[in-house]
Amino acid sequence: MSEVVYPPESLYNLIPKEEVYTEKTPRYMSKYRSTVVLEKKTAKDAMRTMGPVKVEVPSPDKYLKKHSKEPKLPEMTQRTREGRNRKPAVPTRSDNPTMGIHTKRDFIKTASAVPMKPQPICVDTRKGHKQLLGNSGLLPKYIKKRDYGEVPEYLQRAQKEYDSFVREQKEQGAMKHLSDEERQAVLESLKKNWDQLHHKYQGLSLVTDTMSKKSHKERLEVAMKQLESDINLIERFKTIYIPKN
View 1 (cartoon, one colour):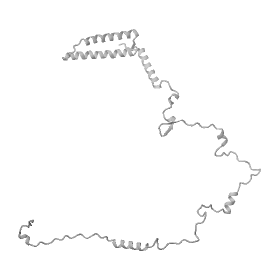
View 2 (spheres, rainbow, N blue to C red):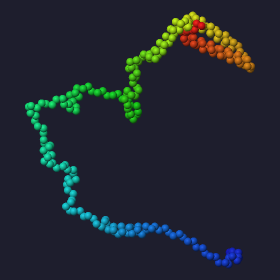
View 3 (tube, rainbow, N blue to C red):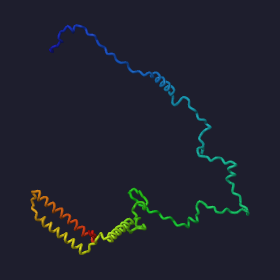
View 4 (cartoon, one colour):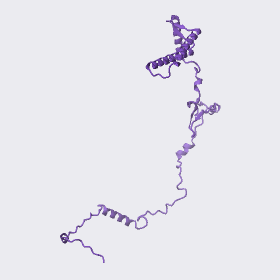
């Protein structure tokens, strides 16, 4: 047999406990409930049979006739009939014909005129977008200019100013033109000086561990670069002017 477990005895258990009741909140009721119920009841009672109670019965005389829905022209009155058939009066012998009247399109001139040539177009997309070929930049319009192939005016003006300056300097005796022999002699002397500096540069030690060695090497490199730039300048220009002073 299973043992029955009783709660421990206590004086507090002898005192009867009051039962606690939880009050529920009242259910929500709309204040329009009665109005809605009344409207629903009246609408339901009015449509208990099939369709509305009062239906307008069609008249037996208003049945659909043949061609009744086709559009009809307005009736022809006496005034419109007379205006349609009215024609201009026949001119008399004394009436002069009107001169200088031109119609909107002269068929004789149109037939004898030269047909218009189609404007060339350029299609630049696969979807067929096109534009005029003249505005696309594909036509060399610049070759049709009057001054095409000529030296621009500002270059001609600059050349004239330079020539006038050189002429003035020659006249004043401030500039001296080097001849080909002198130019060649100067060029050979520059190359000779460069060879001497290069020979000294080749004789430097590989290890530059002192400040004097570094400065000597830098001086040789600067002098060689200056000689190279002078040699290139003289070889590039055949006409050279130097001051007499």
